Length: 464
Image 1 (cartoon, one colour):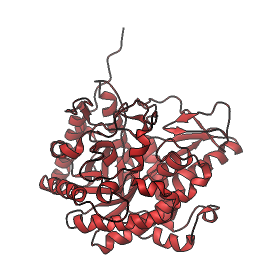
Image 2 (cartoon, helix red, strand yellow):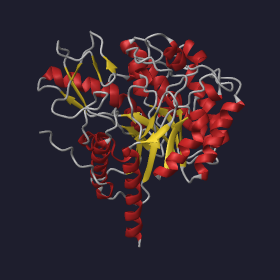
Image 3 (tube, one colour):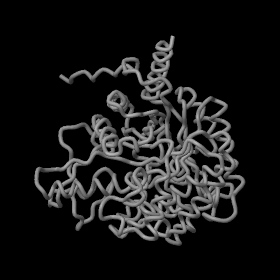
Image 4 (cartoon, rainbow, N blue to C red):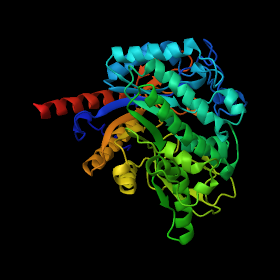
């Protein structure tokens, strides 16, 4: 006899977050906008990469996205129905500055102007990300993030966007996940631009961090405030109790976590890495480590890492692992997995936040969870609801344990093009029919809506 399915967690049973906690949802330009060559937009490195046969695993047409460019009002209405206090979207650099530098495209900048107005009209805080991986193709062809000049061009673009939007945007994100751009795009070649440089990809990390620092300066000069960055973090656990396993896990932890947060929050690279970076590194670190108003954390799952071994995974959590690396990834046993194959470990979020607080202390600004979500297919949305419930409970424990967390952005509002995976991975609270682009809210949409309502009602009662 088949056992009955587990009950759906009640959204009004969540522990209550502090008053003023920001509830939001996230998306990105390349994954949703479509209109890849419309209204003067220039090509991005991702447009070129996706056009190469076999790069998008399921063959999805990435140029259509979810049609957000023409249907953004419909999606803003969905956000309003969700009760979202903020929407994290990204500005497409090549839509605004098609060549990466030089003339600004008025139609592209006008689109984001209208989007911000639409969000404000619904009482939703606009939270734009200035770079979510779509480098203008002319800059990519000139070296992309391996070229120091790209950082300077990014700061110019940031100033253009802030000059148009800063009067209505109280929350800015410079870069999204510089670690993934470095690792997947330049080291392993699974993402645009498809380079396989392994450790020679480190200049891409430094130049992204420099771009962040220069953009902070440009944003503040344009009158912007509320500036942060979205950095991916995963707890890294050693696969075994040997010196070799611990050393491998430590190196992986440094490369994927501390290599980015240390320069941002302490003005230093981890030991041994400063000498591997290009340019006047000391001067650059002073630019990179300017004070932030908040720090964004993207969390999906922990990583289990050990010494290289025959049973190490060739691919795990979206990471292609070529032979010859000084570490190997292992499966985390005994936990549920998403459709993507990622382990579901809510306690990892609590562990991660306490680790960040312990490492950086008062240097850690207030935190927003800028991405957290899961991919599931089919009509049964209970696993997504259970995922959200578990991670929000873990997040609340971190708040109770003293981590200053100010907001949570679920990834993502709608299903979208999941980069090289195409349309096969469905992260959305809202289902997208990729033939018609029709939007249909899932059960998790209603659950998150009811959770936000319950949280606001509870905080209102506590003030009375």
